[in-house]
Each structure stands twice: as structure tokens, then as C-alpha cells.
Amino acid sequence: MKNSIRILRAEKNWTQEDLAGAIGVSRQTINAIEKEKFDPSLPTAFRISRLFGKPIEDIFRFEG
Amino acid sequence: MQSIVMNKSTRKKQIANLAAWTLAWVLSTALVVFGNEFLWAGSQWLTGLALLLNVLLGIGMILSNRRFVEGSDELEKKIQLESMGLTLGLTLVAGIAYSMMDVTNLIPMDAEISLLVMFMGICYIVATLLNNRRYR
Image 1 (cartoon, each protein chain N blue to C red):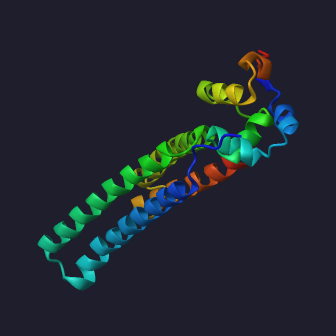
Image 2: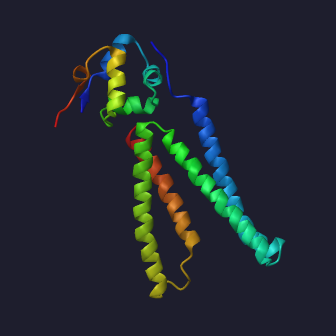
Image 3: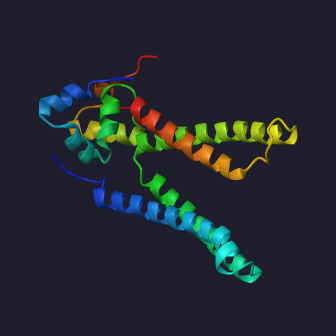
């Protein structure tokens, strides 16, 4: 799954640590999601979406 | 930005708790074996008591490990699950092969379970390190 978290995070000038703390996961998890090595769970995707104030489909794109 | 959830000190406490239970269980294992030989010279009552302590500490260690995994975030859980699954599979295959080597006299000594436990520990550590690296 592709995502635009790195760009959105950079726009807000947040570190991976900031984002991890805000949604309650480890920095390693944010890093793995940004590198598209790991797909987040639905609750985490919703938290990310709510935090950035954007719909999930604007942040995550499924490329099957 | 709102700040929430993952409490690092709670996580550290969970890790310390798991380490303490594991150490206590390992020491109680030594107590059963060496106590029987050197401390109470074959008293079955004391050996049974030490064994009971060993089992109770083992249960405590399992519950502590459960809390540790439940306290992990989703990626950590995935890493733990993959490492445990690989360890289980490798230990099963290696354990049965090792046992058959003993039964068919391919090895000159008896198959010792302690060797299998060491194998299991090494597999788990290596699998966890590799999986951590994979998701870095």
C-alpha cells in the first residue's frame, strides 16, 4: 500500500517521533509505514487520517 | 499537536518485569537440579517443593510475557509473532530430527532437552534481530 505520510509529516514539520507519540505507536512503526514495508492497522490508519485532517483514501492508496 | 498514548516508563517496567520473571525461573531451574545434588542431598520433599516453585515461576514468566506482547504496538507484535512462529517451526523440525538421531543411534549420546532449549533461544533471538532489521 502506498501512502503520503512522509510528505504530510514534513508539511507539518513533525519528526517521526512526534507522529509516533501522537498516534500511540513506536517510531520504528512510523518509519516502516513511511517506507511502505508495513501496512498499518485500520485503527492506526484512522488515527493518522484524523491527525492530518484528511480522508484515509487521500493518505493511503491500495495498489494491488 | 495532541500528544497521547505510548507510555515509555510503563513499557520499561514491562520489560524489567519480564526479565525478572525469566531470571527467577532460570534460577529456580538451577535450584531444582543443584539443590537436589548439593543442598538437601536427595530429599524428595524439598525437591518437590523446589519443582513446584519452578512451575509457579514459569507460569508467572508466561503471564509476564503475555503482558509484554499485549503492550507492544502493532509492528512489534508482528515481529514477535513472526519470530515465535519461526522458532516454533524450527524447534519442532530440529527437535524431532535430533530425537530420531538418538533413537537410530546416529549420535553416540542421548538427546538432551537442554540442547533443544538452547537451540530455541538462539532461534528466537536471531529471528527477532532479523525481523527488526527487515522493518527498520
